[in-house]
Length: 571
Image 1: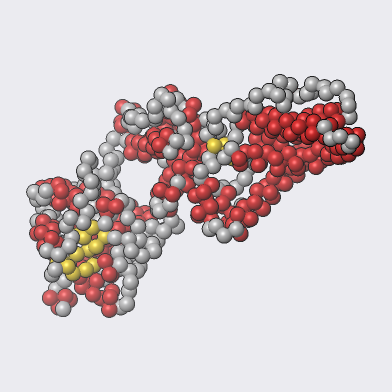
Image 2 (image 1 turned 90 degrees about the vertical axis):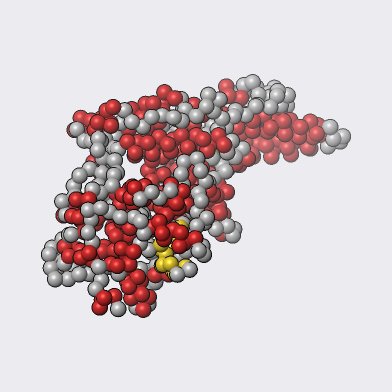
Protein backbone atom coordinates (compact mmCIF):
# COMPACT_ATOMS: atom_id res chain seq x y z
CA UNK A 1 0.00 0.00 0.00
CA UNK A 2 1.52 3.41 -0.92
CA UNK A 3 2.38 5.32 2.27
CA UNK A 4 0.42 8.44 1.32
CA UNK A 5 -2.76 6.44 0.72
CA UNK A 6 -2.78 4.43 3.99
CA UNK A 7 -4.55 7.12 6.09
CA UNK A 8 -7.23 7.48 3.40
CA UNK A 9 -7.91 3.80 2.71
CA UNK A 10 -7.36 2.86 6.36
CA UNK A 11 -5.20 -0.20 5.67
CA UNK A 12 -1.53 -1.07 5.28
CA UNK A 13 -2.19 -4.10 3.08
CA UNK A 14 -4.98 -5.67 1.04
CA UNK A 15 -5.27 -9.43 1.30
CA UNK A 16 -7.54 -11.41 -1.01
CA UNK A 17 -7.98 -15.19 -1.14
CA UNK A 18 -8.97 -16.49 -4.57
CA UNK A 19 -10.18 -19.78 -3.00
CA UNK A 20 -9.41 -21.99 -6.00
CA UNK A 21 -6.88 -24.64 -6.97
CA UNK A 22 -7.19 -23.79 -10.67
CA UNK A 23 -4.39 -21.58 -11.99
CA UNK A 24 -6.54 -20.35 -14.87
CA UNK A 25 -9.39 -19.49 -12.52
CA UNK A 26 -7.00 -17.78 -10.11
CA UNK A 27 -5.46 -15.79 -12.96
CA UNK A 28 -8.88 -14.64 -14.14
CA UNK A 29 -9.87 -13.61 -10.61
CA UNK A 30 -6.54 -11.90 -10.10
CA UNK A 31 -7.14 -9.59 -13.06
CA UNK A 32 -10.56 -8.70 -11.68
CA UNK A 33 -9.21 -8.04 -8.17
CA UNK A 34 -6.33 -5.94 -9.48
CA UNK A 35 -8.82 -3.80 -11.36
CA UNK A 36 -10.71 -3.29 -8.12
CA UNK A 37 -7.53 -2.40 -6.23
CA UNK A 38 -6.41 -0.02 -8.97
CA UNK A 39 -9.79 1.71 -8.81
CA UNK A 40 -9.49 1.92 -5.03
CA UNK A 41 -6.04 3.53 -5.30
CA UNK A 42 -7.20 5.92 -8.01
CA UNK A 43 -10.15 7.03 -5.91
CA UNK A 44 -7.89 7.56 -2.91
CA UNK A 45 -5.46 9.64 -4.98
CA UNK A 46 -8.32 11.81 -6.24
CA UNK A 47 -9.48 12.45 -2.68
CA UNK A 48 -5.96 13.27 -1.61
CA UNK A 49 -5.51 15.65 -4.55
CA UNK A 50 -8.83 17.35 -3.84
CA UNK A 51 -7.31 19.30 -0.99
CA UNK A 52 -8.07 17.21 2.08
CA UNK A 53 -5.14 16.16 4.21
CA UNK A 54 -4.94 12.42 4.98
CA UNK A 55 -5.83 12.79 8.67
CA UNK A 56 -8.98 14.82 7.99
CA UNK A 57 -10.03 12.45 5.23
CA UNK A 58 -9.51 9.51 7.56
CA UNK A 59 -11.71 11.17 10.16
CA UNK A 60 -14.46 11.74 7.58
CA UNK A 61 -14.21 8.17 6.36
CA UNK A 62 -14.54 6.93 9.94
CA UNK A 63 -18.25 7.79 9.69
CA UNK A 64 -18.68 5.15 6.99
CA UNK A 65 -18.10 2.13 9.13
CA UNK A 66 -20.91 -0.29 8.38
CA UNK A 67 -19.60 -2.98 6.05
CA UNK A 68 -21.97 -4.40 3.48
CA UNK A 69 -23.16 -7.96 4.03
CA UNK A 70 -24.50 -10.47 1.52
CA UNK A 71 -27.99 -9.48 2.64
CA UNK A 72 -27.19 -5.81 1.91
CA UNK A 73 -25.88 -6.74 -1.52
CA UNK A 74 -28.99 -8.68 -2.52
CA UNK A 75 -31.26 -5.91 -1.27
CA UNK A 76 -29.28 -3.23 -3.12
CA UNK A 77 -29.43 -5.21 -6.37
CA UNK A 78 -33.20 -5.75 -5.99
CA UNK A 79 -33.71 -2.07 -5.15
CA UNK A 80 -31.74 -1.03 -8.24
CA UNK A 81 -33.73 -3.48 -10.40
CA UNK A 82 -37.01 -2.08 -9.02
CA UNK A 83 -35.99 1.50 -9.79
CA UNK A 84 -34.67 0.60 -13.27
CA UNK A 85 -37.83 -1.33 -14.14
CA UNK A 86 -39.88 1.74 -13.22
CA UNK A 87 -37.69 4.07 -15.24
CA UNK A 88 -37.69 1.89 -18.38
CA UNK A 89 -41.41 1.20 -18.16
CA UNK A 90 -42.16 4.92 -17.82
CA UNK A 91 -39.96 5.68 -20.81
CA UNK A 92 -41.74 3.02 -22.88
CA UNK A 93 -45.15 4.41 -21.97
CA UNK A 94 -44.14 7.97 -22.84
CA UNK A 95 -42.79 6.84 -26.22
CA UNK A 96 -46.06 5.10 -27.03
CA UNK A 97 -48.17 8.22 -26.33
CA UNK A 98 -46.50 10.48 -28.91
CA UNK A 99 -48.94 11.00 -31.84
CA UNK A 100 -47.43 10.38 -35.26
CA UNK A 101 -44.07 9.35 -33.91
CA UNK A 102 -44.83 6.10 -32.14
CA UNK A 103 -43.27 3.71 -34.65
CA UNK A 104 -40.11 5.80 -35.08
CA UNK A 105 -39.78 6.33 -31.35
CA UNK A 106 -40.14 2.63 -30.65
CA UNK A 107 -37.75 1.59 -33.39
CA UNK A 108 -35.07 4.03 -32.25
CA UNK A 109 -35.63 3.06 -28.64
CA UNK A 110 -35.43 -0.65 -29.46
CA UNK A 111 -32.14 -0.23 -31.35
CA UNK A 112 -30.67 1.75 -28.45
CA UNK A 113 -31.78 -0.88 -25.97
CA UNK A 114 -30.38 -3.71 -28.10
CA UNK A 115 -27.00 -1.95 -28.22
CA UNK A 116 -27.22 -1.53 -24.46
CA UNK A 117 -28.20 -5.19 -24.09
CA UNK A 118 -25.14 -6.33 -26.04
CA UNK A 119 -22.89 -4.15 -23.88
CA UNK A 120 -24.46 -5.30 -20.61
CA UNK A 121 -24.10 -8.97 -21.55
CA UNK A 122 -20.49 -8.42 -22.62
CA UNK A 123 -17.27 -7.62 -20.68
CA UNK A 124 -18.30 -3.98 -20.26
CA UNK A 125 -21.28 -5.14 -18.21
CA UNK A 126 -19.09 -6.17 -15.27
CA UNK A 127 -17.30 -2.84 -15.32
CA UNK A 128 -20.62 -1.02 -15.25
CA UNK A 129 -21.86 -3.30 -12.43
CA UNK A 130 -18.77 -2.58 -10.33
CA UNK A 131 -19.32 1.17 -10.63
CA UNK A 132 -23.06 0.89 -9.95
CA UNK A 133 -22.45 -1.22 -6.84
CA UNK A 134 -19.94 1.26 -5.43
CA UNK A 135 -22.35 4.15 -5.94
CA UNK A 136 -25.25 2.26 -4.38
CA UNK A 137 -23.34 1.38 -1.23
CA UNK A 138 -21.76 4.80 -0.90
CA UNK A 139 -25.28 6.26 -0.95
CA UNK A 140 -26.16 4.02 2.00
CA UNK A 141 -22.90 4.87 3.78
CA UNK A 142 -21.75 1.27 3.61
CA UNK A 143 -18.24 0.08 2.84
CA UNK A 144 -17.71 -2.50 0.15
CA UNK A 145 -14.17 -3.81 0.60
CA UNK A 146 -12.25 -5.55 -2.17
CA UNK A 147 -12.52 -9.31 -2.19
CA UNK A 148 -15.37 -11.80 -2.03
CA UNK A 149 -18.03 -9.26 -1.01
CA UNK A 150 -17.13 -6.94 -3.85
CA UNK A 151 -17.23 -9.83 -6.34
CA UNK A 152 -20.65 -10.80 -4.96
CA UNK A 153 -21.94 -7.26 -5.44
CA UNK A 154 -20.63 -7.05 -9.00
CA UNK A 155 -22.33 -10.35 -9.86
CA UNK A 156 -25.64 -9.26 -8.29
CA UNK A 157 -25.74 -5.89 -10.03
CA UNK A 158 -24.67 -7.47 -13.32
CA UNK A 159 -27.54 -9.96 -13.04
CA UNK A 160 -29.98 -7.16 -12.22
CA UNK A 161 -28.87 -5.12 -15.22
CA UNK A 162 -29.19 -8.08 -17.60
CA UNK A 163 -32.69 -8.85 -16.32
CA UNK A 164 -33.79 -5.23 -16.65
CA UNK A 165 -32.46 -4.68 -20.16
CA UNK A 166 -33.77 -8.05 -21.40
CA UNK A 167 -37.27 -7.22 -20.16
CA UNK A 168 -37.07 -3.77 -21.76
CA UNK A 169 -36.04 -5.22 -25.14
CA UNK A 170 -38.94 -7.66 -25.00
CA UNK A 171 -41.35 -4.86 -24.13
CA UNK A 172 -40.12 -2.45 -26.83
CA UNK A 173 -40.05 -5.26 -29.40
CA UNK A 174 -43.73 -5.97 -28.87
CA UNK A 175 -43.14 -9.41 -27.32
CA UNK A 176 -44.62 -10.70 -24.05
CA UNK A 177 -42.39 -9.83 -21.13
CA UNK A 178 -41.06 -13.04 -19.61
CA UNK A 179 -40.71 -13.48 -15.85
CA UNK A 180 -37.17 -12.83 -14.58
CA UNK A 181 -34.92 -15.86 -14.97
CA UNK A 182 -33.04 -14.96 -11.75
CA UNK A 183 -35.08 -15.83 -8.65
CA UNK A 184 -33.72 -12.80 -6.79
CA UNK A 185 -35.86 -10.55 -9.01
CA UNK A 186 -38.90 -12.82 -9.59
CA UNK A 187 -41.19 -10.90 -7.25
CA UNK A 188 -39.94 -7.40 -8.14
CA UNK A 189 -41.95 -5.34 -10.61
CA UNK A 190 -42.31 -1.64 -11.29
CA UNK A 191 -45.65 -1.74 -9.49
CA UNK A 192 -44.50 -3.68 -6.44
CA UNK A 193 -43.39 -1.83 -3.28
CA UNK A 194 -39.78 -0.77 -3.21
CA UNK A 195 -37.61 -3.27 -1.29
CA UNK A 196 -37.02 -2.15 2.31
CA UNK A 197 -33.30 -2.02 3.19
CA UNK A 198 -32.15 -4.16 6.14
CA UNK A 199 -30.58 -2.35 9.07
CA UNK A 200 -26.84 -1.77 8.50
CA UNK A 201 -24.67 -4.60 9.79
CA UNK A 202 -21.59 -3.22 11.51
CA UNK A 203 -18.91 -5.86 11.72
CA UNK A 204 -16.55 -6.11 14.66
CA UNK A 205 -13.64 -5.12 12.42
CA UNK A 206 -15.48 -2.05 11.14
CA UNK A 207 -16.42 -1.06 14.68
CA UNK A 208 -12.79 -1.39 15.78
CA UNK A 209 -11.55 0.73 12.86
CA UNK A 210 -14.10 3.43 13.57
CA UNK A 211 -13.22 3.48 17.26
CA UNK A 212 -9.52 3.91 16.48
CA UNK A 213 -10.22 6.63 13.90
CA UNK A 214 -12.52 8.63 16.15
CA UNK A 215 -11.17 12.21 16.46
CA UNK A 216 -11.16 11.79 20.24
CA UNK A 217 -8.21 9.43 19.81
CA UNK A 218 -6.32 11.62 17.34
CA UNK A 219 -3.84 12.76 19.99
CA UNK A 220 -3.05 9.50 21.75
CA UNK A 221 0.59 8.51 21.79
CA UNK A 222 1.92 6.01 19.24
CA UNK A 223 2.65 3.58 22.08
CA UNK A 224 -0.94 3.72 23.31
CA UNK A 225 -2.26 3.32 19.76
CA UNK A 226 -0.09 0.24 19.26
CA UNK A 227 -1.55 -1.24 22.47
CA UNK A 228 -5.10 -0.51 21.27
CA UNK A 229 -4.43 -1.96 17.82
CA UNK A 230 -2.84 -5.09 19.27
CA UNK A 231 -5.67 -5.64 21.71
CA UNK A 232 -8.40 -5.11 19.11
CA UNK A 233 -6.63 -7.38 16.63
CA UNK A 234 -6.52 -10.12 19.26
CA UNK A 235 -10.21 -9.68 20.06
CA UNK A 236 -11.13 -9.80 16.36
CA UNK A 237 -9.15 -13.01 16.03
CA UNK A 238 -10.98 -14.59 18.96
CA UNK A 239 -14.50 -13.45 18.05
CA UNK A 240 -14.27 -13.13 14.27
CA UNK A 241 -13.71 -9.81 12.54
CA UNK A 242 -16.64 -10.34 10.15
CA UNK A 243 -19.04 -11.06 13.00
CA UNK A 244 -21.87 -8.52 13.37
CA UNK A 245 -20.94 -6.43 16.38
CA UNK A 246 -24.51 -6.30 17.67
CA UNK A 247 -24.75 -10.11 17.61
CA UNK A 248 -21.89 -10.67 20.06
CA UNK A 249 -23.22 -12.15 23.29
CA UNK A 250 -22.13 -12.35 26.91
CA UNK A 251 -21.23 -15.97 26.31
CA UNK A 252 -18.94 -14.94 23.42
CA UNK A 253 -17.16 -12.54 25.78
CA UNK A 254 -16.81 -15.23 28.46
CA UNK A 255 -15.21 -17.51 25.87
CA UNK A 256 -12.76 -14.73 25.01
CA UNK A 257 -11.81 -14.47 28.67
CA UNK A 258 -11.37 -18.23 28.94
CA UNK A 259 -8.87 -18.22 26.07
CA UNK A 260 -7.01 -15.20 27.42
CA UNK A 261 -6.54 -16.91 30.79
CA UNK A 262 -3.95 -19.17 29.12
CA UNK A 263 -2.74 -16.71 26.49
CA UNK A 264 0.97 -15.86 26.97
CA UNK A 265 2.93 -12.66 26.54
CA UNK A 266 4.95 -12.23 23.31
CA UNK A 267 2.55 -14.66 21.66
CA UNK A 268 3.42 -13.73 18.08
CA UNK A 269 7.12 -14.28 18.68
CA UNK A 270 6.57 -17.53 20.57
CA UNK A 271 4.03 -19.05 18.20
CA UNK A 272 4.18 -17.35 14.78
CA UNK A 273 1.46 -18.21 12.31
CA UNK A 274 -1.02 -19.60 14.83
CA UNK A 275 -4.46 -18.24 15.62
CA UNK A 276 -5.11 -16.83 19.08
CA UNK A 277 -6.92 -19.98 20.17
CA UNK A 278 -4.12 -22.18 18.86
CA UNK A 279 -1.58 -20.02 20.71
CA UNK A 280 -3.49 -20.40 23.99
CA UNK A 281 -3.69 -24.17 23.55
CA UNK A 282 0.02 -24.42 22.70
CA UNK A 283 1.01 -22.25 25.67
CA UNK A 284 -1.07 -24.37 28.05
CA UNK A 285 0.48 -27.53 26.61
CA UNK A 286 4.02 -26.14 26.89
CA UNK A 287 3.54 -24.75 30.38
CA UNK A 288 4.17 -21.15 29.28
CA UNK A 289 2.89 -18.69 31.93
CA UNK A 290 -0.19 -16.70 30.92
CA UNK A 291 -0.40 -12.95 30.64
CA UNK A 292 -0.76 -10.99 33.85
CA UNK A 293 -4.15 -10.25 35.35
CA UNK A 294 -3.54 -6.58 34.57
CA UNK A 295 -3.01 -7.28 30.86
CA UNK A 296 -6.06 -9.52 30.79
CA UNK A 297 -8.07 -6.76 32.43
CA UNK A 298 -6.81 -4.32 29.76
CA UNK A 299 -8.11 -6.54 26.94
CA UNK A 300 -11.50 -7.00 28.58
CA UNK A 301 -11.77 -3.29 29.35
CA UNK A 302 -11.03 -2.47 25.70
CA UNK A 303 -13.82 -4.81 24.60
CA UNK A 304 -16.32 -3.23 27.00
CA UNK A 305 -15.19 0.27 25.99
CA UNK A 306 -15.59 -0.61 22.31
CA UNK A 307 -19.24 -1.59 22.78
CA UNK A 308 -19.91 1.41 25.02
CA UNK A 309 -18.46 3.77 22.39
CA UNK A 310 -20.41 2.10 19.56
CA UNK A 311 -23.71 2.51 21.37
CA UNK A 312 -22.94 6.07 22.49
CA UNK A 313 -22.16 7.06 18.90
CA UNK A 314 -25.32 5.24 17.72
CA UNK A 315 -23.26 2.95 15.52
CA UNK A 316 -24.73 -0.20 17.03
CA UNK A 317 -27.76 -1.02 19.17
CA UNK A 318 -27.36 -3.31 22.17
CA UNK A 319 -30.88 -4.17 23.33
CA UNK A 320 -29.52 -6.60 25.93
CA UNK A 321 -26.84 -4.22 27.18
CA UNK A 322 -23.05 -4.22 26.90
CA UNK A 323 -22.01 -7.91 26.71
CA UNK A 324 -18.48 -7.29 28.00
CA UNK A 325 -19.10 -4.95 30.91
CA UNK A 326 -18.11 -6.20 34.37
CA UNK A 327 -16.22 -9.31 33.29
CA UNK A 328 -13.77 -10.26 36.04
CA UNK A 329 -10.16 -10.36 34.84
CA UNK A 330 -8.87 -12.85 37.40
CA UNK A 331 -9.63 -16.37 38.50
CA UNK A 332 -7.92 -18.60 41.00
CA UNK A 333 -6.01 -20.11 38.09
CA UNK A 334 -4.27 -17.03 36.76
CA UNK A 335 -3.92 -15.41 40.18
CA UNK A 336 -1.90 -18.44 41.25
CA UNK A 337 0.11 -18.48 38.03
CA UNK A 338 1.10 -14.82 38.38
CA UNK A 339 1.17 -14.58 42.17
CA UNK A 340 3.54 -11.90 43.43
CA UNK A 341 4.10 -10.30 40.04
CA UNK A 342 2.10 -7.13 40.66
CA UNK A 343 4.15 -3.99 40.91
CA UNK A 344 5.15 -3.01 44.44
CA UNK A 345 7.59 -0.61 46.15
CA UNK A 346 11.27 -1.39 46.48
CA UNK A 347 12.32 -2.57 49.92
CA UNK A 348 15.00 -0.60 51.85
CA UNK A 349 17.50 -3.39 51.08
CA UNK A 350 16.71 -3.19 47.36
CA UNK A 351 17.06 0.61 47.33
CA UNK A 352 20.44 0.28 49.02
CA UNK A 353 21.53 -2.29 46.41
CA UNK A 354 20.44 0.06 43.61
CA UNK A 355 22.15 3.19 44.90
CA UNK A 356 25.31 1.37 46.01
CA UNK A 357 25.78 -0.12 42.53
CA UNK A 358 28.95 0.76 40.57
CA UNK A 359 26.94 3.34 38.59
CA UNK A 360 26.59 5.32 41.83
CA UNK A 361 29.88 4.61 43.63
CA UNK A 362 32.29 4.29 40.68
CA UNK A 363 32.06 2.42 37.39
CA UNK A 364 33.92 2.02 34.11
CA UNK A 365 31.27 4.14 32.32
CA UNK A 366 27.51 4.58 32.25
CA UNK A 367 27.09 2.72 28.97
CA UNK A 368 28.22 -0.91 28.62
CA UNK A 369 30.39 -0.67 31.74
CA UNK A 370 27.71 0.65 34.10
CA UNK A 371 27.83 -2.53 36.23
CA UNK A 372 31.59 -2.86 36.39
CA UNK A 373 33.55 -1.18 39.24
CA UNK A 374 35.77 1.63 38.04
CA UNK A 375 37.11 5.11 38.77
CA UNK A 376 34.47 7.13 36.94
CA UNK A 377 31.37 8.85 38.35
CA UNK A 378 29.24 9.85 35.32
CA UNK A 379 26.13 11.78 36.25
CA UNK A 380 23.91 11.62 33.20
CA UNK A 381 20.49 10.18 32.44
CA UNK A 382 21.02 6.71 33.87
CA UNK A 383 22.29 8.21 37.11
CA UNK A 384 19.53 10.78 37.59
CA UNK A 385 16.34 9.16 36.31
CA UNK A 386 16.05 6.59 39.17
CA UNK A 387 16.65 9.40 41.68
CA UNK A 388 13.83 11.43 40.11
CA UNK A 389 11.56 8.42 40.48
CA UNK A 390 12.62 8.09 44.10
CA UNK A 391 12.26 11.70 45.28
CA UNK A 392 9.84 13.26 42.74
CA UNK A 393 7.64 10.26 41.93
CA UNK A 394 8.10 10.82 38.20
CA UNK A 395 6.92 8.23 35.74
CA UNK A 396 9.76 6.87 33.66
CA UNK A 397 8.91 8.76 30.48
CA UNK A 398 8.23 11.96 32.45
CA UNK A 399 11.76 11.86 33.80
CA UNK A 400 13.48 10.85 30.56
CA UNK A 401 11.82 13.58 28.45
CA UNK A 402 12.56 16.55 30.77
CA UNK A 403 13.88 19.76 29.22
CA UNK A 404 16.21 22.15 30.98
CA UNK A 405 13.36 24.68 30.78
CA UNK A 406 11.14 22.31 32.76
CA UNK A 407 13.07 23.08 35.94
CA UNK A 408 11.87 26.49 37.11
CA UNK A 409 12.05 28.78 40.11
CA UNK A 410 8.62 29.89 41.33
CA UNK A 411 8.43 32.28 44.27
CA UNK A 412 11.86 31.19 45.47
CA UNK A 413 11.11 27.46 45.13
CA UNK A 414 12.78 25.29 42.50
CA UNK A 415 10.20 23.04 40.87
CA UNK A 416 10.12 20.35 38.20
CA UNK A 417 7.34 21.18 35.75
CA UNK A 418 5.99 17.98 34.25
CA UNK A 419 4.40 18.99 30.98
CA UNK A 420 4.34 18.40 27.22
CA UNK A 421 5.29 21.58 25.39
CA UNK A 422 7.52 20.35 22.59
CA UNK A 423 7.50 17.57 20.02
CA UNK A 424 8.42 14.28 21.65
CA UNK A 425 7.02 15.14 25.08
CA UNK A 426 3.91 13.26 26.14
CA UNK A 427 1.73 13.03 29.23
CA UNK A 428 -0.14 9.94 30.32
CA UNK A 429 -3.19 11.86 31.57
CA UNK A 430 -4.41 15.43 31.95
CA UNK A 431 -3.71 15.21 35.68
CA UNK A 432 -0.08 14.36 34.91
CA UNK A 433 0.80 18.01 34.25
CA UNK A 434 2.04 19.35 37.57
CA UNK A 435 4.81 21.17 39.43
CA UNK A 436 6.84 19.21 41.97
CA UNK A 437 9.23 21.10 44.31
CA UNK A 438 12.77 19.75 44.04
CA UNK A 439 13.35 17.58 47.11
CA UNK A 440 16.19 18.77 49.41
CA UNK A 441 17.99 15.43 48.91
CA UNK A 442 18.01 15.95 45.13
CA UNK A 443 19.49 19.39 45.71
CA UNK A 444 22.20 17.95 47.96
CA UNK A 445 23.04 15.36 45.29
CA UNK A 446 23.42 18.18 42.75
CA UNK A 447 20.30 18.20 40.62
CA UNK A 448 20.18 21.98 40.31
CA UNK A 449 23.90 22.00 39.52
CA UNK A 450 23.14 19.59 36.64
CA UNK A 451 20.41 21.87 35.31
CA UNK A 452 22.72 24.90 35.35
CA UNK A 453 25.52 22.98 33.64
CA UNK A 454 23.18 21.74 30.86
CA UNK A 455 21.83 25.23 30.25
CA UNK A 456 25.35 26.70 30.01
CA UNK A 457 26.19 23.98 27.49
CA UNK A 458 23.18 25.05 25.39
CA UNK A 459 21.33 21.77 25.89
CA UNK A 460 17.57 21.80 25.40
CA UNK A 461 16.97 18.37 26.87
CA UNK A 462 18.09 17.70 30.41
CA UNK A 463 19.32 14.22 29.48
CA UNK A 464 20.44 14.42 25.84
CA UNK A 465 22.24 11.09 26.21
CA UNK A 466 18.92 9.25 26.44
CA UNK A 467 17.42 8.22 23.11
CA UNK A 468 13.80 7.67 22.14
CA UNK A 469 12.51 4.26 21.11
CA UNK A 470 10.82 3.31 17.85
CA UNK A 471 7.48 4.72 19.03
CA UNK A 472 8.97 8.01 20.17
CA UNK A 473 9.00 7.28 23.91
CA UNK A 474 12.25 7.80 25.78
CA UNK A 475 11.05 5.34 28.39
CA UNK A 476 11.13 2.28 26.13
CA UNK A 477 14.94 1.87 25.80
CA UNK A 478 15.47 3.00 29.40
CA UNK A 479 12.96 0.45 30.73
CA UNK A 480 14.85 -2.39 29.02
CA UNK A 481 18.16 -1.14 30.37
CA UNK A 482 16.77 -0.72 33.89
CA UNK A 483 15.55 -4.33 33.89
CA UNK A 484 19.12 -5.43 33.10
CA UNK A 485 20.44 -3.04 35.75
CA UNK A 486 18.19 -4.56 38.43
CA UNK A 487 19.37 -8.01 37.44
CA UNK A 488 23.02 -6.92 37.78
CA UNK A 489 22.48 -5.53 41.30
CA UNK A 490 20.60 -8.62 42.43
CA UNK A 491 17.08 -7.15 42.60
CA UNK A 492 15.26 -10.02 40.94
CA UNK A 493 12.10 -10.36 42.99
CA UNK A 494 8.75 -10.34 41.08
CA UNK A 495 7.10 -6.95 40.81
CA UNK A 496 10.35 -4.99 41.03
CA UNK A 497 10.31 -2.54 38.10
CA UNK A 498 10.99 1.15 37.62
CA UNK A 499 7.40 1.93 38.57
CA UNK A 500 8.26 0.59 42.03
CA UNK A 501 9.83 3.99 42.72
CA UNK A 502 6.47 5.62 42.14
CA UNK A 503 4.71 3.17 44.43
CA UNK A 504 7.31 3.88 47.10
CA UNK A 505 6.90 7.63 46.62
CA UNK A 506 3.18 7.31 47.32
CA UNK A 507 3.77 5.13 50.37
CA UNK A 508 6.35 7.52 51.80
CA UNK A 509 3.91 10.43 51.40
CA UNK A 510 1.27 8.45 53.27
CA UNK A 511 3.69 7.63 56.09
CA UNK A 512 4.73 11.31 56.25
CA UNK A 513 1.09 12.25 56.86
CA UNK A 514 0.69 14.13 53.58
CA UNK A 515 -3.03 14.50 52.75
CA UNK A 516 -4.31 12.41 49.86
CA UNK A 517 -5.39 15.54 47.95
CA UNK A 518 -1.82 16.89 48.08
CA UNK A 519 -0.33 13.48 47.26
CA UNK A 520 -2.59 13.27 44.20
CA UNK A 521 -1.31 16.65 43.01
CA UNK A 522 2.34 15.79 43.52
CA UNK A 523 2.02 12.43 41.82
CA UNK A 524 -0.34 13.48 39.02
CA UNK A 525 -3.05 11.10 40.14
CA UNK A 526 -6.79 11.62 39.90
CA UNK A 527 -8.48 9.99 42.85
CA UNK A 528 -11.47 7.74 42.02
CA UNK A 529 -14.72 9.71 42.03
CA UNK A 530 -12.98 13.06 42.14
CA UNK A 531 -11.98 15.35 39.31
CA UNK A 532 -8.32 16.26 39.00
CA UNK A 533 -7.31 19.17 41.18
CA UNK A 534 -4.34 19.98 38.97
CA UNK A 535 -3.74 23.71 38.94
CA UNK A 536 -5.12 24.28 42.43
CA UNK A 537 -1.55 24.31 43.68
CA UNK A 538 1.59 25.20 41.74
CA UNK A 539 1.33 28.97 41.26
CA UNK A 540 2.69 31.78 43.45
CA UNK A 541 2.95 31.09 47.16
CA UNK A 542 1.26 27.68 46.88
CA UNK A 543 4.50 26.01 45.75
CA UNK A 544 5.95 26.81 49.18
CA UNK A 545 3.07 24.80 50.65
CA UNK A 546 3.95 21.86 48.39
CA UNK A 547 7.66 22.21 49.16
CA UNK A 548 6.98 21.82 52.87
CA UNK A 549 5.23 18.53 52.22
CA UNK A 550 7.86 17.24 49.78
CA UNK A 551 10.64 17.93 52.32
CA UNK A 552 8.93 15.51 54.74
CA UNK A 553 9.40 12.55 52.38
CA UNK A 554 12.15 10.25 53.70
CA UNK A 555 13.30 6.67 53.15
CA UNK A 556 14.31 5.11 56.48
CA UNK A 557 17.26 2.78 56.09
CA UNK A 558 18.51 4.46 52.89
CA UNK A 559 21.63 6.60 53.14
CA UNK A 560 22.69 8.58 50.05
CA UNK A 561 25.40 10.68 51.69
CA UNK A 562 27.93 9.19 49.28
CA UNK A 563 26.11 10.95 46.43
CA UNK A 564 26.11 14.43 47.95
CA UNK A 565 28.20 17.06 46.20
CA UNK A 566 31.06 18.51 48.20
CA UNK A 567 31.08 22.27 48.72
CA UNK A 568 33.81 22.51 46.10
CA UNK A 569 31.81 20.50 43.55
CA UNK A 570 28.67 22.50 44.19
CA UNK A 571 30.37 25.86 43.77
